[in-house]
Image: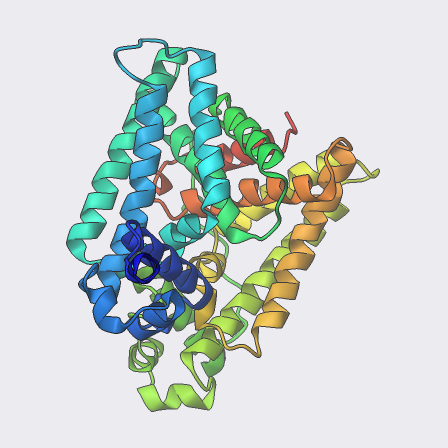
Length: 403
């Protein structure tokens, strides 16, 4: 009797178990690719049993993200306790190490925060924004006490960049032993917090009488469709844009878009290829300018070219802000190869500059640098900074250890 009773008893942490199962499914398939029945089946329960803990799929996602945020808040409170008044270098390093460890342990939460948070209802999104902003404000407050020469806005920028270092674990699958992984992320975060941001520069005056543009003729209809789709995906997000919207923006009927692209996914793949082409051309130009061969200077130029490309036409922002689950399976291998080939150039140069790093450590470092640039250009609170391009290159140089 006692054996049957213990076997039928529900675990005390059933809600957490269900959330963990759902979190992994969301990460693998995307929010729209997972149903309640999928989560129940993977957890070994029935649909009605799952509804005893969560009202719907959206509630599960909110629970996962808010729980992850709560863990970060608790780590912040523990390390920066007002009663202790010991905001020493050791306490700040302790906070960064705790946050790094949590990022390593729960890479799925970091991925969901990055890709799936937009699927929450307005109240949950507001709560996450409010609480994450308050947490970053607490970080900035401590940073300002340690570095009073910073302005509040500059301190906030460095804190956002630090958060991106921890979030970078969600964009790749490279791993290390937990202790070393945590140490590396902590070191990279400290580099960010020690950055001396460049002085703001006056914009160059514009020429009131610019030379006439070279007349190359109007772009093809296919190019017009691709440009319109890029702009709409950038402004409104992939899922909120229809083929009718794209056709209207390109000046044609919605069904006519299908003459050029069979689906939105095909458009997204074409945007990814165009972004890859822009990056590779910019990288080739940057590396050719580094003569005689100097890996440190080449890596600096490569970082500079990335920031310039990222802050130019929006193809790259779209390519990095849209969840990969929206890309057709047949297109994923090619786009992944393009990305890997590009990152490999950074890793090769970083290993030459810092031979003490092994290839996995170099990859993690490179992804942290790239993620800072990707995130800050899409973060409204900092994206409008007039000196952002120079600030981003300075941050990337620091993370890569080029200063």
